[in-house]
Each structure stands twice: as C-alpha cells, then as structure tokens.
Image (cartoon, rainbow over all chains, first blue to last red; front, side, top):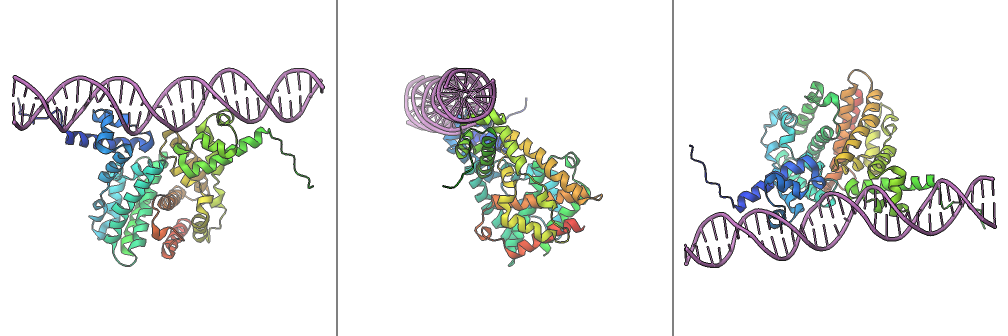
Length: 186
Length: 186
DNA sequence: GACGTAAGTAAACAAGTGTTTACATAGGGA
DNA sequence: TCCCTATGTAAACACTTGTTTACTTACGTC
C-alpha cells in the first residue's frame, strides 16, 4: 500500500484554493451573472457561506479568480521575430484554456464585474504590453493588439458558425498571424 | 388654438412600439441581465405586465429589440472604393448609436440571450456581408470584417482608457481604415 | 346611450439570489 | 485528556426578478 500524503480534512488555505479554482471554471463557463455561488461551492465541495467568509463576497471572488487567470507573460514571453505565428497558435489551439477573455466577455452584463474586468485588463494586460512593445507608438501597438485579440475571441465566442467551429480556416489563420506580426514589426 | 393630432390614450400598436424603443435604450445601456422589465416599462410609461402580454416575455422582447436594431445596410450601402474611411467614420463617430454590438456584448452573460445574439448576428449580419463581398473568399472576408468590428467595439466598451476616451487616436484610426479597406480590396 | 371587448393596471406569486446567523465539530496545544 | 479555537455546515433571511391573475376602464359598435 503506497504511502499517501496526509490530507487534513480541515485546511483553510486548501479550501480557499479549491473555491478559487472552481470559480475560474464556473465563471468562464457560465458567466458572472449565471454562475451561482452554490454552483461554485458545489464544484469545490464546500459550503456556499465560505465564499463570503474567505473572499468577501461573489464580486471579490470574481476579481480574485480573474486576477489569477491573467498573466501577461502568456504574450510577452514570445520572441518578436516569430510573434505572429506563435501567438495565434497559442490563442487558436489552446485559447479557451489560456485566455481569460471569454470569462471577461461573459461578465460584461454586470456593471460591477465589468468595472473590474476593465481595470484588470488595463493594469494586467494593456500596460505590460505597452511596456513590452516599447517605443513612442507603444500605446497604439498595445491598442491594436487588444483589438485583434478581443475581435478573435469575441468572434469565436459569439459566432459559433459551423464552418468555423473546428480548426480555424487556413487563410484566416494566415491573416491573423500577419496582423499580429505587423504590430511588432511596425 | 392649434389643431393637434388626436392621440388615443389606448393604442396597442403605439404601446408596443414604445416598449420596443425603451427596450433598445435600456438593453444597450444596462445589458440584458441588469435591464429589468420594470426599468423598460417605466421608461415607456406602461405597466410591466405588458411585456409578457405583447412580446411573450423578456427574452422575446430582447430578440425583437435586437432584431429591430440590426441593419446590414449600415455596412453594405457604402461604396467599396472608400469603404475603410467611411465605415470607420460611421463606427467611431456614431458607433454607439448605430451599432448593436454593445447591446450584444452586454447580453453575453445570459446563455439564452447569447444564443439569440449568435443567431441574429449570423443571419442578419454575417450572411448578408458574405453575399455583399462575393467571390470565393467571401466567408473569410466576412469573418475578418466581424473580427475587426467586434475587436473595435469590445475595445471601446471594455477598456475605457483615458487616452482613448475622446476622439480616436489618428494613427490608430488610420490603421483601422486600412484594415477595413484591405478586406474589400483583397 | 348602453354594452361588450380590447387595453391597461395593481398586486400577488413563485422562484432564485447572495449573504448572514446560529450551531456543530475536528484537531492541536496545555 | 481536556479545552478552545479555527473550520465548516445548515438553515433562515432579505431582496429582486419575471410572470400571472384579477380587476378596472376607455373606446367603438349596435
């Protein structure tokens, strides 16, 4: 019988982490409004009241979940020579797993959650990108990057067209790659 | 005393129109979830129960309001030679009035409303655009148009950055114009 | 002018929400 | 071993929501 790690049944840190992890899943899947505290805590296997106790409420939990999902390095760790191909590969092939944008889109219906997404998107994505791009047109470059990315995910999220449901159409993919590459090259 | 048009205080068609008009305002401003039937009917000056009676419920009212706001001619009536400059002018300068996209973004949180926006966006925008573009790459062109448009509105809607709050930055605007123009030229 | 139907209203309804309160209990330290 | 506190639970709370039901009233018709 293999030795198993002792798992104390009462561990606040572990419980918080479980709630946070479940929140990321449920918020991304159902959106802020439709994701119930009871849904999240059921997935985490704990009592609904712990959301208020440990995070201060559903809205704060959303903020924590989104903040944990945001990581600008997912863009800025790529080499600029091959930026276009690589970022599209990341977005198109593992986009729903790697990007918090669907989670943000489905929170746009709630005004408070929307204010949080706007702030985090600016501080945790737009600003780091601007620094990474550098130069005097860095702000415009960051804006272009945001627009193309938002457009791509909004398109996949909102327009479940049969002809684009599977792998992305080759010439559309090539266009996207050139769009992203042009941002760093300009 | 000037002759005034007789306004019957009881006119079902007029009441329906008033509700529909108010729904467009409120849905665009607050989103589907936060827009209450009571908000809409208060603006229209009627009783909340009339939403169910005349439209079959809040969801059907949303569908009717969105359908009434969608008009592909806002894009396809433009000359292709000057398409880029003109469409950007329309979107950037009168975008919130002319485009139903903000209304759609803020409905993404509700799964049923989202299904409606997806269907209407496909049938009332994507398909007509595809026909208008024509040729064998029409689908890809329509997809590119959707992505750039969605990206632009998502950006303005979700990222209220101070530096882009007012009129759009000139070089960013030039880039957008070239993007749209390239779609029709390719 | 009386009447019946369409138009509109007010209020109750039923369901779901996030949060709070009161209570139970596991587990480590004295 | 005995507590005492952190951890977790169950249930009630307070509130909002879209919708339905019962009722009132204005308008066209005979």
